[in-house]
View (cartoon, rainbow, N blue to C red):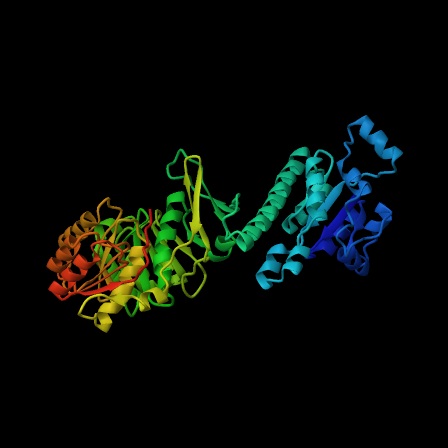
Length: 510
């Protein structure tokens, strides 16, 4: 039996090779892998001894050879294949262990295109694909984490067709993801990120309890191992809907950096938000916006969930808590609550992956775009349109309202007062209806909007929204501007003494 080992990431490869040797495999290897194995006492055979050719063109050609691919690809159950291999002096290769040139690491550290090109693997994917195609006879290993299980299976009679088939699937996933990464990079570099093909590749992090409904199967797939690194389950099991709600809540809470922000979400829409001196204060004020909707909702804590805050949250039923970190004492508060789910990011503050692109499935395909966000520059450069300027406190509320509005389903309006979201209307077909809905909800909750700041994610098409805001006691408004009736809106703001700012940037979220 022979094993071909050619790896870029050499973690644990010496131990793997020695275990294969002890299982009766002759080791063939290439370049740096061969050198390392020889230094560590493995009786490896250099690839050129098999191919009868030296490595050429700075290593670009070393495994692209019939003695390699013939050894991998010929079918052992096919008499003609076996006879041809014998006639040509081709010996079987029964195990292939390959991981690929570090393309991702290269593009993350350099913009030198020549260096990037040289880190596109050719021989590696070819060997992986050959071995995967002939999985009925050949074991293909592409994941370092599979080394131990491969050895265990070899030693204990577990080298079954089912085992090799599972490794085959992983191998094709590996090469497909690698090629997709290269294609996406080239399109980003030369086609502005929008080439004729777009590849979205995620690694499975975990199965969700089910999909949006119990009859649907679901799973979470991640980019760059984000959730593997930044998502720890402390209590319960995440569902598909939990993850979409968590995403909505975390995006809003994390938008405020290191500030003590708390966001409460129900069905992916914010129903409470506050930014006060402490997380306990923030949660207490956030809950006042809509405690009815907060029941069974998701709470995102931009900091540490401690025992005191946990006790406060535990006064009502919430389904999910996601916090930057959770103390053992806080977790103990919920130990008798079977339905609550608690997750943490094991960090000081909530973090986002910072995905550059966003996409949404539609029947027959998906729409793809650059990710949206509200930059600090957008807020600081907002242009005053009214005669009256906002006070420092009003402008801070405008900034909070603007960020929430940008991350909330359109049409939406957000009212913020003293760092607390006092009312919100979202997902409406009319911006006027969104404003009315928000004000009615605030009235039902007994909340005073007087002196509040108002944000809209898109322009107000008519002055009627300004009239309604003035009647509610709003003192400052921020919106993108851009309506053909902006002059009427500005005039209305001046009539009421409202400070009005245009950002020039629309933030629809559909």
